Image (cartoon, rainbow, N blue to C red; front, side, top):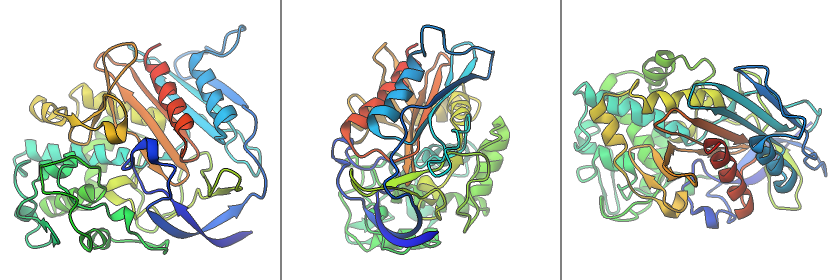
Length: 401
């Protein structure tokens, strides 16, 4: 039985300092949820599989990646965790822990689909940079070059904000998802932009860095204006089909479902509140900032292809990897390029990726220049420091194997 209730959900992406994200969310939304009563996450019921061989956990116990997923389920109260790990030779292993559906006790689908939140931004940035390579866009052109007169507000002027500043979060545009109302419904991109423009700029363009989902709504609108085609179609043609992402898509307007086998996503109002199933939710309020659905293996394939130069010419990939400090949002040593985040690894070197958060799901991952790639997904947004550290540690453990 479904009930209508108001839940305060954290907004898409990682726009808040992870050390302060236990605070209430930006968007208060009325959503239809499945009430699970006092049902708690299960003890770590885990599985291990390998897509490259018949390898399994050793007789001595699970390997370090499996142990890290077990920790997320057992210690952090996460209903389920999924991971895909690709080594330098291209061999892939997939892992699961927990339960895919708390109501039925169904197992976690191996490499199941999840809402990938702000990983969507990297897809959008790649499309923009492809258009730059085709000389159809210019990173240092202003927003008004493509959307004349659209972006105006208190301290906000599209004649002073560049495309590069949108992709790098240095525009100063306020974050629309901090100001959404209580209605869960279909939002047009222009409605999301209008929500942001009712608030003053955070700072003058180019003077600071601050994560804002509004930047990518505008980037998506520019892609549509330049190409004359929907953003979802451009992502599908230019990226998804090009590199064979068979389980990745941009949901159609009004589609609240997840197409393929997937673990259910959950929301918890407070530490002692029941978990609520919010798997089905209209994702349009994320749009170019966070609407897509994918799997851990597909995300590994995407970031690996990107770093290997299969999606962008060398000049544009170099621009994408030109970074500014972003520690306030992404943690110690993190830097933000054009829709791409670099993080130092404890074993040396950097990983490149993004990560994403959407009601019911959270993902972290990265790829390295030598071919390693990892993505870990959990089926509840993390609101405490210990859980976030454990998730980041799971990614580092896999990349440093």
